[in-house]
Structure formats: C-alpha cells, structure tokens
Image 1 (cartoon, rainbow, N blue to C red):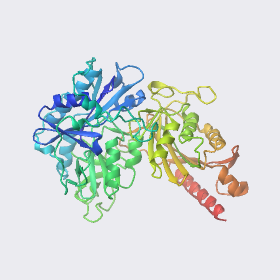
Image 2 (tube, rainbow, N blue to C red):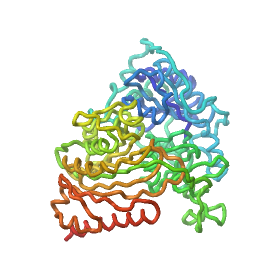
Image 3 (tube, rainbow, N blue to C red):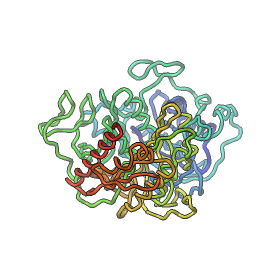
Image 4 (tube, rainbow, N blue to C red):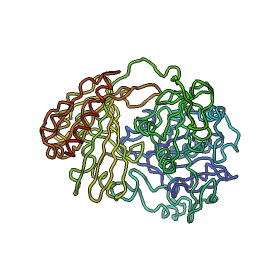
Length: 587
C-alpha cells in the first residue's frame, strides 16, 4: 500500500547521489535494505517507515513510460535513453513529503520529471477499514493522516542538471558492486535493473533488524520482513492498495503474489473504480488466489472482473456478498444465493476487438531459433511490428532481444522463468521504436497495441516455451492473417499447438472494472510434429474441419464465434477436437 512516485532522469542516479539525496530528504532518518539489498527503505527518527526506493532501471523503451505514466512524463527528456527510479511512500503526509523531496531532488540534479500517483490512497484505506479491514501495517498509523500532497496524478517537476559533488567518499562508489547490469547480457541479474542502490546502506545509518516472529523470521545476517507492498491482510489473503490511472503488474505486486501464493494465501489489489489495469495484471488477477477489488467511492466494493459486490471477511479478505445480509459465511467465506453485479458494471456501451494468441513451442538444443522468435512472428503478422521491450515485470524497459531472453532463460534453468513483453505505443514504431520485418519491408501497420508474456520451463535440455499475446484493434481484427501466421511458425519449427480467441475491450489493452465477456475461440492449429505422428487422415476426421498448410501444419477455423449460445457451442467444438487429437495420439 503506497503513494507512488517515479523519477524519470536524463542521467543515471548512482549510489553516491542516492545516498546524499536520502540524507537530505530525511536528515534524522535511517535507511535499511529490503529484498536482499536491492530495495532501500527509509525510516523516520522514531523507526517508522516513510518510503522505499527501488533500484534504478534504464529506460530503453520510452513507449513503456508513456503507456503507464502518460506522455507528459517523458516531456523534455532526451530521445533514446533515460532512467526510471520508483519510490513507494506510506499513505500519510510526512511520508509523502519526504518521498517527494527525494524524487524532486533526483529530477533537479539529473534533469527530468517526477510522476506521482493519485492522492486517494488514504480514502481507499479508510473505506476498507469501515468495511471491516484491519488498519495499515508497518506503523503507518503512528503518524496522523494529513491532507493530500497537493499533487494529483501526472508530471510534477522538471529540472536542470546539477552534478553530484566529486568530494564525496569514493567508498560509496566502490560499494555499488559495479556498474549497470543487463539481464540476458551476463545472465546473472534481473533484466533492465541497475546496481545503483546496492551498497548504499554502507554509507548511511543502517536501520534496526526485524526480529523473528509475527513481523518476520530470523535468517542469517538479515531478517525477512513481510512484503512491503502489502497494506493490510486477512488470515488467508493480503491486500495491495494502488491509486493509479493505469495499474501495472509491478515488481512489488508480482513479488507479493509469488511470496504469499507459495504459502497458499491470496493476493487482492484494491483500486478506485476509475482505475484501469494492464493486460499483464488482469492475467494475474483472474487466477484463483487473486482478486481485483474496486472501490465504488461510496464506501462499497466490488470485484473488477466479475462485478460482484464484496464485503470484508477476516479469513479470506474481500469476498462476494450474497443477498441475505452484509456478512459472508464463516465457512467458505462466500454467501450463497443469487448475486447481482455492481450498478453500471454491465455497461452496454460497445467495445473494440481483442485477439488472444496462445502458442506452445517445444525446443531442443541449441535453441535455434532463439526463445522469443515465435513471439516476433506472431506480432509481425497480427500487428505489423515486433515487440518493443521485455522484462520480468512491468514496465518492460529492456529493448527487444531474443538472444538476451534466451540467455536469461538458460541462466535460470533448471528453474522456469516468466517474462513480459510490450509492443510500441501507438502501433508500429511510436515512442517504443520501429522495426522492420525480416524481408526488409515494414510488415504493414495493423494498428492497435499488443502485450503478453513468455513462460519457459525446462526438462533437462528440452525447453517448453509458452507464448501468450493479446492484441487490441480499433476495428475488425485481421483474421485473414491467421493461416499465414500458422505457416510461418511451422516453417521455422516454432509450432506445437496454437489457439486463437477473440474478445472485446479497449484497443490499448487496459481494462476498466466492467464486464468484458468470455473469450470466443477463433481457431486452433497443430504443427509438424503432430502431422508426422498422427497423419493427415486422423487430423482431418475430427469435429472441426482442418486445412492442411505448408510447414506442414493444420489450421482449424472455428465456425460461429459470436456471442451467447453460439460462443459456447464453438468452445465445445474446440474441446471435442482436442479430445479427438488426444485419442488419435494414444491409438
């Protein structure tokens, strides 16, 4: 739970400068490392948490800053490269002001802008507490709640260039542990991160250790505290509070989901109903242990995916409210009976078209073509351009690089890796940069945005790559390009199975808390291995009529992908075809 700031700077903020700025922002404070030393937490003189500073990230894809923060955030910054430093302040006035001083100092000394999230976190917390949720954690309540910071969302400051003094102790620079590291370059660091914050605690006063027990557990030199992104919690769920116009799958949300999900606890993200979430975050929040909680502004809450009204439950967090009363049952945590969606959730206003492509590729050594090449082919056929950036979370700030993706996945082996990718802002090119197709042409311009992810798992030297990409279109999607896409994937040995579905939503692939409907199947395909193993006769004899393509591959267009019962009939046809192919493989 935090009031968020992002300093976009023209030059890299090194550890020496960050140390000086933190001392100036909170002269009486102390700083302690979190998350293994990469994230720094600033405490006030009484030991109360004020704000956290994430490691600086190099921005090679300016379109990501525009997509998540707006165009004003990059105004006046040099073309090409800048640096992203994110700060998360506790939702009280002293913390916001201290974080604001630090962010402003970064922008003024290095040149740049400061983006701030909305001032409504305190109201979100008050409404949640009125619904029965416990108070904020980590001592935030020790400070009296102040008014707004005087700032709304958006760009807050621009500055000149004041270089840090050369007289500072050189030991701080040595404590950085080296200069910027790039995931996929050396394979031993998270993609897009910098080591700028590492070692800063050696220069400024180190905060107290967290003892074992409810607030953390003792482990080696440092204790592990409960995740700083979490605002408050129930027995089986934790809640992250965000007041942003566009809420992405940040490193904090991703880490909190992984940490608490491993213990069987759910993650709930609380936002105002005016917020939109990215495709990546929505993909996480539709999972069983996750929930999007939208505050309606009148003290009530509803599920941003299903629209069901929610109430607070001390065991399971926010749960659907039934018609019989305001409280959920103590057993399952959900009341029984008919549930009606929140007012306005079933907004009949039309939406634009989405295509969602799910692809499985089975790789063998030496991984040629590299991981990521399949995503390139899909994007080129359905958006007219390659991806612009990639990363382990949003923002995906590293420039698109399949070879770097392959090195990162190999470094994480035998463990798996999940990577996020994004297309350029504004269609082909935009602020994310432009790319040409393999044949030297521009690949056409299909318009719309795209985003998605790559999940890589290993079985010895065998890699399975799962690609999921979503495309937004202001008009009709290019369904006529799908057979050519199947042939291109099969021709490069990058097709095991493919499923294409159609949905509706905004062309920028952000989602408001309203009903978007179920995805309808458009078609499926199998690649050369299935053709060789099953034979064309078995492939052609199922419930769906297949088209044999070069590669070889078989493309199965699904008839009737319209709304209502027609959609469910098409879903049943795809399920029957999958069962037919599985049975043919066993026979």
